Length: 181
Image (cartoon, rainbow, N blue to C red; front, side, top):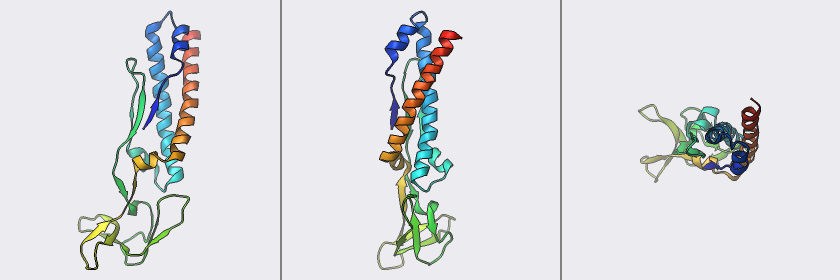
């Protein structure tokens, strides 16, 4: 979870003391703009680290917007582990060939000895592995969830620095607009 707080509230209130009711509106607008930018940046950072497409990265990342009464925006990700088949998996169709997969872009394909790609009766395709020595039962293999991907140290560091820069820019822009029209 990434949370934006305002550090310059006192300075902004001093500058806008003639219009105190507008201060919180200006702050909420700047925070929301920065958080929206942070959401896109977080998805980009996840795509840089992991083999996941843009819509997959944005899907579970929700933004709780700031209001004039609540000056905090939060990016929150909830989700389950993702099927391994949705990543870079070889073979790409049901087959008995050895399965090779990669989840992180920085890694190479790893062979999963006892795994196979199969399609269930419902049409669901995934990488499966036998639980015992008999034919059944089998279990699906999954990658980390999107919240775990967003919790990666590299992703958090990238988003934090970018959002702080963006928040300063948005606050400066909003203050200029209010003071100079």
